Amino acid sequence: MKFGGRSVGGAEAFRNVVALISNYASANDLVVVTSAMNGVTNSLIEAATRASQRDEKHVAEVTEQIRTRHENVCEQVITRTDEIKRTNAQLDLELRELEKALTGVSYLGELTPRSLDYVLSFGEKLSTLVLAGALHDSGVSVQRLTGEEAGIVTDASFGEATPLMTVTQRKLEKKLCPLIKDKKIPVVTGYIATTQDGVPTTLGRGGSDYTATIIGSALGADEVWIWTDVDGIMTADPKIEHAAQTIREISFMEAMEMSHFGAKAMHPKALEPAAKIGLPVRVKNTFNPNGPDTLILQDQRIKSVNIVKAVTSVKEASMITVSGAGMHGAPGTAAKVLDVLGKNDVSVLMISQSSSEANISLVIARSNLERATAALKESLLKESLFKEITSEADVSIVAAVGAGMKGTRGIAARIFRAVADEGVNIKMIAQGSSELNVSFVVREDDVLKSVHALHEEFRLGD
Image (tube, rainbow, N blue to C red; front, side):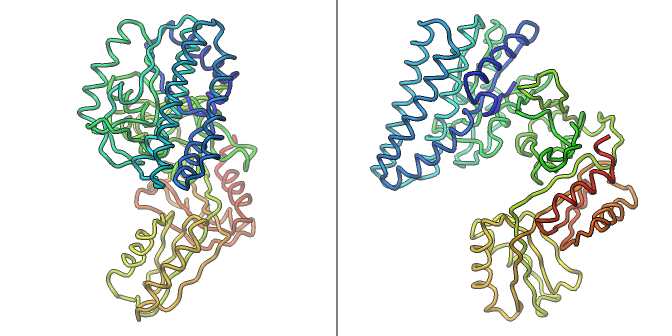
């Protein structure tokens, strides 16, 4: 069971998690993975950044806020005085180490990826201490472990480390199986791990989910449960589409496609260990545990016959078009464009090229537009191949996702007709060879109409 940041966001949330774990522990062997309390990771990033700027006053304020927040929750969720003292003493040790780390960054005036990973590791260290203390206080036998202590070993790609699965599996089995056999629940820090040399690393976006699936696959779990603040994976963002429903079953590939396009789902990287061995992953709502949930399975086990499973969207996007008659038939033009963006740390969300090869359109995050446009103009316009670089700032991506689209005729026609009937103009289209999604770009003002039209067309609210 993995609990996200909102699931452990405050005293009441912690009590809820303790009750859930206690209820399931009586009939199941459990391993618990926990994220940092919501907002803490962002606070640590801010503290580390300000430390590199030698803003010692701000760093002291942030660390004190983090200390106060965890100590307050500890005193609210733990009833026994001796357990409160023990947990607070452990929190104090970790917070002192955090202060040392930030002081070191401040002295150097430099924040390296390695240093940032070390600072960020404290969010999960602190939350697991509080949860383990609360569980112990309620009579549940637990053992709190960091990702390193549990046995998760990665390469040295700080900020986005990759697990070394063979050694990790061996270490996890050796450490966790005896605890489970002794009816102790391991409470493991999500997101953080270590290199073979013992240097702290983080697993990047979706890291705590990743920790859960790594452990689940290594131990041969029956299922991995991801506890969030929503009723599973939805057919659309309920803030946009009020008729959105929980998708009861979805394939790993569909879930991965959805997460790329803004759906509140697991990161594709986090699904890989489970998908590799067919380990079912269930997404549940911590605050509505008996409500609907989503089960992610291998394709062949999916019972649903829905052609389209969900409609997702990515807002705050921009579109850049690179054009020039000289691009026609010239090999490597797309590579040159992508190379410029890659060197400037700009991720491309979507790409389309006309059959004439005279223009390439790309969609990127709006926050990167100015930097991307400037870099492309500086690098490309001095070549005769490229004539013009234009951009549109206020666009969004809308994507229809579903394995049932594969090999089904007329799906694109239905999608574009439904959107056109709402008076929406489509600026760009892309579909992968997997046929699991059809993506298109519209003005940001047209996102609501587009999502609603497709949700209605494919009867996803029924």
